[in-house]
Image (cartoon, rainbow, N blue to C red; front, side, top):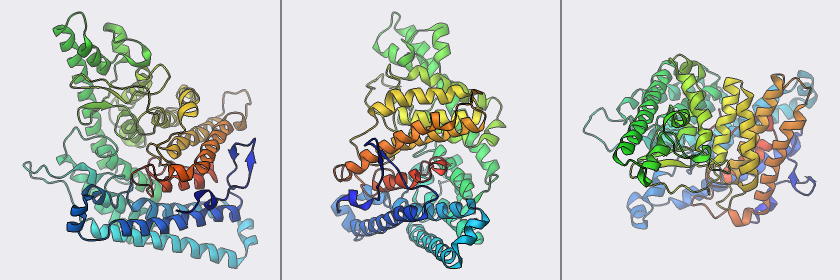
Length: 520
């Protein structure tokens, strides 16, 4: 790929470090960014076509069956750069136009308005073509109702990893944006049918990337894109309840395991210490004590994946809680659910390293606890924790959550968040920058809610986080040639360059920025 720094229009720098993105009121600058994203999208589609040329036998001989399975996912496949980014560009243009006053639109003239409408239509049409190609290749694979059949994997039923679920979710929102309401409704109906069959998926499969929370994420995505807040309400409630029941069961099992281990090995021991951590001790909050202290640290909700209790935003507790908070109305109707979620979020502080970075796991069933303080990613570590805390502030209106998120961001993300793993969202620079943008929006919301009554303005707090996000983008631009080929899927949304260009685009309109396919 050509020198990537030449691809991005960055003309203004403050203090030698801060990228000033195009203002949302500057259509010419915004259009420059849009053209960059469009060129990238076209290049990515060509890349996916070339990479996967040949039939299945040839792919097997090349040993890339795993790559083929992920070919069309939003996470690392073609749906991200080839469909999602075009949809986001179109939606941004639509929102930008809707937010202008009538006099500004009239001043543009019919020719400019007509050109913009054609551009939006073209973006949505191209996105729809890419989606249709994915749906043609991903046949409807529902969970089997036969208890003896165990070959179906839940990766097919999540927004990020499921080609069909991701394709249907995108089809629904693209159809709605383009005025194809019948087509949008068909996609929404099929998506609900998939959800109705999730009762046959193992109860333990709850996390975002492969489990039930990942399916709920698809429903949240559709609700946001179709402005239908009641879509799938009854189904959402049932799935959310099953996720919460599993969280309570796993948390209780951890407590029982801790008590049993303590009884067997009086006086402590390595395995006892690890299990006590899983039940509620350890981390940044101190040692693995018993009794009242351990009870105060115990997580009321806990989930495991492959025998490990992950805490991060993609495989673990933080991501599941974030998704549940996106369905406040449905979850609030489940007795005690909102309080359990709140308590779990609060007690995650006791499972951080002394640095403030969230531990990636709480140990596993074999007593292994190799968690060290290295991972500062959205998938594992502080950035995903920050996203959850900002969401908790939005839902519970308790500034303590926002202040805690800021402390973690200053102490961990700003100091250690410029990663060498690439430009992507999951474990790259862009994801960490998006967590800083979430803090910017959190402080904007804080101001709208009245602040602290001192008259302190948004610029005193929110702008700090916007400047940090700009710095991360600048670092990415300056090192793009080095970082581009680091991940396994360098063109993709969650590992590669597509996530980075979405970050650049969102820096042009930070108030409407959203972590792609995560924040609704």
